[in-house]
Length: 260
Image (tube, rainbow, N blue to C red):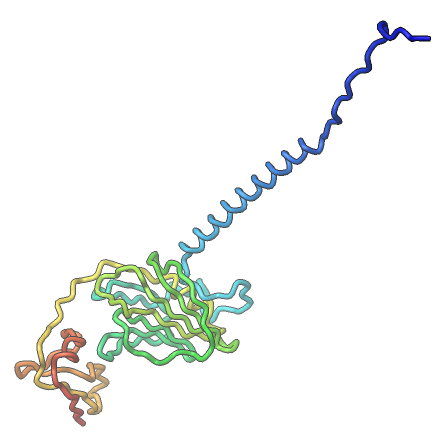
């Protein structure tokens, strides 16, 4: 017998199964992308801040050392101002200040175990520590600086600050040289925090060959602290600081004479 299927309702088409995990995948991708963008922004911000960080500080991250000079004592500190090279700083009254000369001027502040050298035109090369240094860049007294730091076997630090910004009357050989014992870390931080640049006077150095270069080793009279070296030009004594000494060294056949 033949069945009549004309009045039967055809079966409904099969609907594809919905996959809710696709929507979750889109949300996951969005979150990951957002985190990556924010992370990249944060890293770049940190790099930018590091590049402009003031570095006139030598303390470790977690200092546990007592200062040899308390901050309250800074009112009694000495102030040294140099208008020739345009800088100023303060230092403890019981530390020693010395202006020296080795083809160029150098300015030194020292205690028993620590020393700060300010060398606007270089020279005074005392050699480098044996250990491998850490090198970074930052700011010193607002100026772009390359910092080379050595750890002195737990006894202290040696640091060279080489200013890479153009400083009037300073040469590319400049450096601020620190050799500091652990017990003086805090004091050195205080000293370096007072360092600032001022408007220098223009240099008009003599470019001429002196007749003589004298080293005076005679005992000083009455405690005189006169310069121990000088030139003779046109029969008169002239101080080395008046000359472009690098020009003299290159162009003049001049030997040092010692007098006793």
